[in-house]
Amino acid sequence: MNLLMIIFGLIAICGLLGIVQSIREKNVLALVFNAGAAAIFGWFVVMTIWHQGFPPTLH
Image (tube, rainbow, N blue to C red; front, side, top):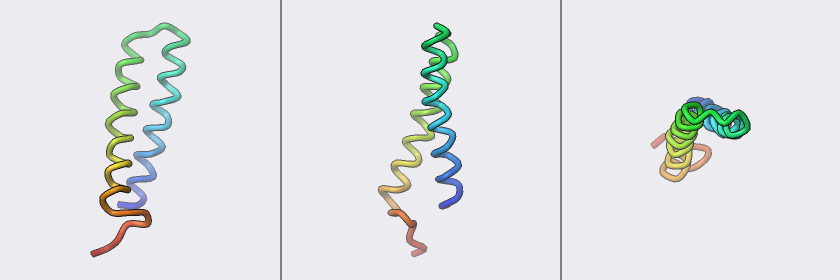
C-alpha cells in the first residue's frame, strides 16, 4: 500500500500541474478532468495517511 500511495500522490501532483496548464490554455474540459483526478487521487492519499499513518502499520 505504501508504493501505491506514492504513485497516487504523484498522479495528484501531475493533476495539479495540469490544472495550471489548462488555465493558461483556457481549456475547460482539461480543467475538469485534471481537477477530478487531483481531487480523487489526492483524497485517497490523504485518507490513507490519516487512517494507516506514515509509514503504514501492518496490523
